[in-house]
Amino acid sequence: MKTSKVGLALLLVCCVWAVFIVAGCTKDEVDTTGTIYGIVNDADNGEPVSGVYIVLNPGGKTANTGSDGRFEFLDMEPGQYTIQISKNGYKTNTKRISVVAGEQTSGDMVLERGESRIKLSTNSLIFAKGETSKTFDIMNIGTSGSVSWSVAFSESWIKIAPVSGTTSQGKSSTVVVNIDREKITQDVTANLLVEADGESMPVEISVKFGESEGGGGDEPSEGKGSCGEIVSCDSEVKMEFLSCVKNADAVEFQFLLTNNREDWQVWFNRDQSDGVDDKGNSYPGYNTKFYVGNSDSFVTNGNAVRFMKGVSTKCRVIVPGIKNEASSLQRLDWVISSSQPWNPQVKKITFTEVKW
Image (cartoon, rainbow, N blue to C red; front, side):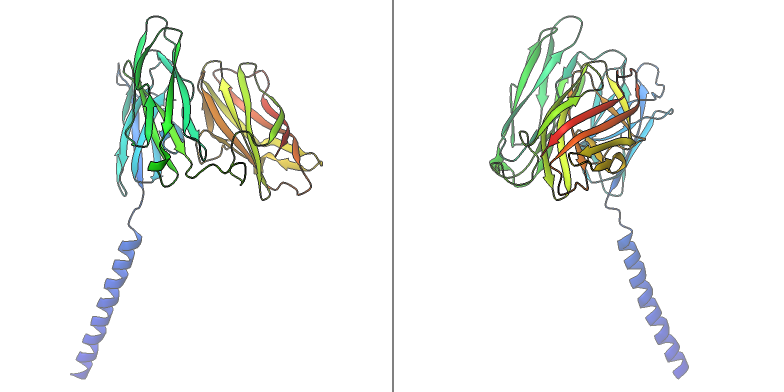
């Protein structure tokens, strides 16, 4: 009888431990992120479209469809996202989706043949601390006639003027974006949607919380630092220096790149890129990080970067391990390995005398 009682007690203990183990495993296996997957088809014939450039906002993640027209974004935080798809010979298309933790969200879309009638001067506006107003332009690039447009948004801290209008062929209209800082308590992002003739183009709004630091601190902002010259890779690719600051032993500088030729897809080569400071110290490109737009992921050798025609894209470069005795980068080359559908005149962008 005692043996039976001991055996029963051991069985109960094992059962209790099993419950705890199962409960612990179940808790650990709860997904906190979701997945976006989809396929892009031709609106006319229903066939998959390969080589479609996809931008996901907020976050600025990018992808290209494969030969089967499919794409996916893994490990996405729950929330609202905007997918924008584009390819030469097709109209740009945009879709809003919601990502739920532990679930797959369909991002299936179609592309209609035909050229876009509008183009935006930028696809992102970044409000530094204290800034409350910025602008962007809507350009009518159609071959004839006027185009009517409107700007959609849902956030109460954003004010737009005007919210709609009509732009003549070959002309542009300026839209003013104002931020009510009394309604935000942290860094925030949101998307505006510019809609015209069945097209929807997003403009990502990023706002840094807090008052202007009046020139102090290490937050990169326009007007800090200087650059002797930026030698562009092509006469139709314009470069504009914005700022340069040093945080600890890393230097970060920002610039605008405006592509005035047709839409351009570029592959950079970090391994062949390098720099040297005013004391002769070298900095290999494989340690340097190059960011395009608002993406949190730096460009690698295998990732293509797309620059739309007529759009100014904000870029930043971070060079780590700067020596204490250095006061500037005498030269930094960012090498282009390949591009399409056109090749630049010189396969690199060179920055000279970058001071912080």
